[in-house]
Length: 149
Image (cartoon, rainbow, N blue to C red; front, side):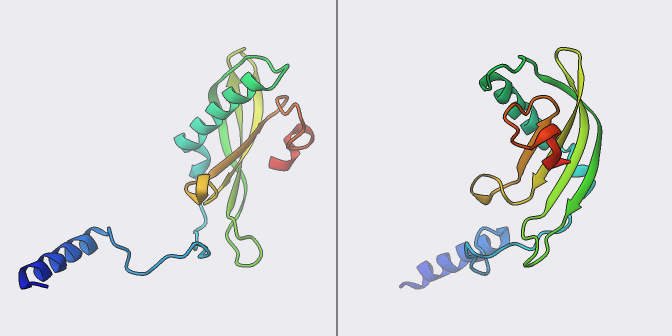
C-alpha cells in the first residue's frame, strides 16, 4: 500500500470517528440498552399524540360499527404510573398515561395509553398502545380499557 493511500485511509477514519459515524465498540442484537426513567412530559409528546390520532383514525375506519369520528384535541394529559427498566424483572420500561379526547362529534371521552420504550418497529423508537373508552369493540384491553389504566 502506498504512503499516500495509507494517509488517505487514516484521514478518512479519523474524520469518521470524530463525526461519530464509526462505532467505537461493536453492538450485538442481544444487547439490551440501559434506558433511563422517562419523564412524564413524554405523555404529551407530539409524536406520541400524532401516532394515537393516526391509529385511532385507522381503527374507526376499519372496525365495523364504530362511529366515523376523529380526535380533535387532547385535554388533561397526565401520567398514571411508570415502570422503569429493572434487570430481570421489567426489561421494558413503560409509561402509562391518561387524558380526555375531544372527538369530531363534539363528545369528550377518556383515553388511556402506554408508551413502551425501545419497542417500535424493528426495536427502533417507541411503541404506543391506546384505548378510547367506548371504542374497544373487541375488548382487546378488557372492559373499559382496564389493561391500560
